Image (tube, rainbow, N blue to C red; front, side):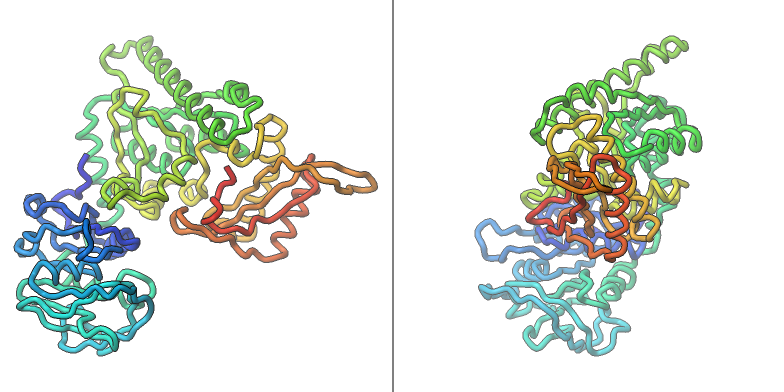
Length: 531
């Protein structure tokens, strides 16, 4: 499936050379209300010319242009007449292929620098003569290609910014997209608006209307089924599809017995009663808990939960077909389409150089496998969006804040927050403790300021004293982290009085717990979830 925006919108194409900042570039452009799309570094010029973007950005990357196997651009791109901005490795590619000289330094230059703007380049309109910038590069340009001139320099780099304004080719030795370049947004703004002539037409309202049109064109009169978890992504997809195709959508919500407290009530109320979305609720908690009896290995837990979910989902779909048949539906009007909450970072994984190893680390928290096991065509209406944009879409569609801004929750649910065997009693203890964590985080206004905050039940019992009696009860660990995307994370330094309230309440109110500990490890080396 293509990921391009409709042709009526402005578009900046980003060629990915493997920089850790490529997604940041994409997000910065979208913050300017211009659609950005990330593609492989070796995308042929003829492909780009078929639907030419307003501008092209060449990302940075860890390689040297002279390394064996270093990613190389199709040089015909420079002849398309499309404005191009090369950032770090992107600049090296530009200089290398257009006849300049690049020197491999053998060292990487990191850190802040002061940029001296020399000749009034359009890139630096309104920024004055000096700009704070952030360097992160290995190679450096030592001679410019014909037609290029210096636009700015630093004390260590005479070619920190270069340009050929006739051909609208621009290169930067530094990273304008990172927060350490404070006025980098204005540099990108000048490129996008003044040089590429983009208009501010990438808005959430326009995206939703376009997405609805695409869904209607793809689905036609057919029916769509969606596995609704109550998480942000599936909730936004449900609201968007309901706006697009109404009762052609049916959501299946499976209670696997591993949900947070009152989760099934919230989902049924929000989507069934408030949005009037067709919702099939399946209470399969007994099946899941029976399958998990005696299982302690984390991988085996996930596998059991994933396989059982597929069985339950498939059975629920067959029941929907049977119900439709009883109600006189056409025998050919089955559920041809499965909707999924695939996001743009997942799409980018498939175009990045060598993939992203971090993806393997996080994928095990999700219950997947449906497309392989069941014969559906996929509908992925938010695959163009980053996570923060999905939240914006949710608000635009009228979803409540507690759904849109809720914290990530693992696919296998509380099973990966109970170390060891999952039992009804351990689930009761963990749910009660987790409810206290959430309520105190919300009451103190910390809930929406962190990435995740939750309780973990450890299979560790220790001696305690409650009243005048000796206890021998379980331990709860608190995991509270800040993160941008879940790939890395740091523990949050919560106020001591808040930690004290959470601990006191758990020990006093949750039967079976007499000790609370705080997890102060980062990711890496630890993961956010304990299993």
